[in-house]
Image 1 (tube, rainbow, N blue to C red):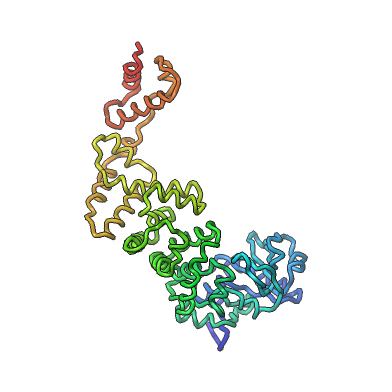
Image 2: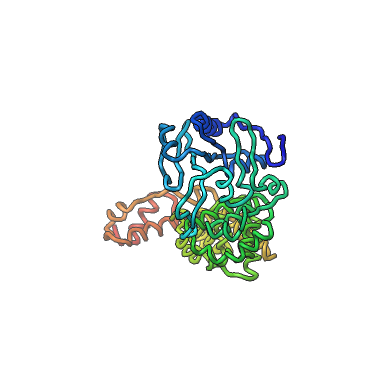
Length: 417
């Protein structure tokens, strides 16, 4: 890597198919007489030594020219200067250099004015995201001090932070998420602006908020993001259901102990104080998917129920141990007990019980069906399902092991001959 005052040269990832496709788009634009730069997070990642996963392109070509230059395009945001170009099986956002004029909804500009690279960079969120890469030479152009901020580990708003956050209210939460991802500090003036503007996060759609929280929870240091969100007031404004005070300290400890886990377990760590019903209600408000809600709720419920093991009935114990996400629930319980300094004996017992059963013992084969119960003279209705469950309970207890035993159990229960 070589450098001058406002630019450096990086080694291009020429082995990457997506990079080569992005560079090809830039070449076509250049050949037609337009500027074209790779911009945004991909350039930041390259400067940080991280392999980028996607590429955005900023150009002096207007959307109509982009649409004419490329065969496979999607005019997703022509009014904002944005066209999706498909190249070599990849989709790239190609955006015309622009200056934004007014943000009435706190998200999208009311109108845009096509301009040059400098003005385009100055409207972006943070200096580390304001870099532009020449895909042919590997030259990174820095017009906002992003390279030095990356070296110093700082997240700094470009220009006036209050204005940047007024333009897009999600940027406050993005700063916190970037801190969790990179380990960088938020520059003091930017941090104070986040505090001043925290309440405005409520103007952002819950889908965008929950997406940022998920990225934060899956970051390398999610507890750092959580602490920053709580300390700036963003957490209270975005997820007001969560308790404050000492509960937040414990939640940060739980999140830290579970870092690197899957999304379901990390959401469960965040929402554990609400119980499984409260977590369900909160995730519904945040418009998470039904699958996500079921998983997170199940993990929290398993964590709560595992403290009661062993149950008086071996069938009930086995039913609990075989639940989906039981292992995740025990992990959540372990992190919660460790955070409060309590004994881990319930965790050890739960794991010992689970390890002591084979899969066949937990999930015995179905010996009879509803048709067998009807054949024995039972009436149709919900009682059939109840009787099937009773038979499975007896299998779990070890008192029924064969089909003839199950048929005899049905005969006795229905009064058949």
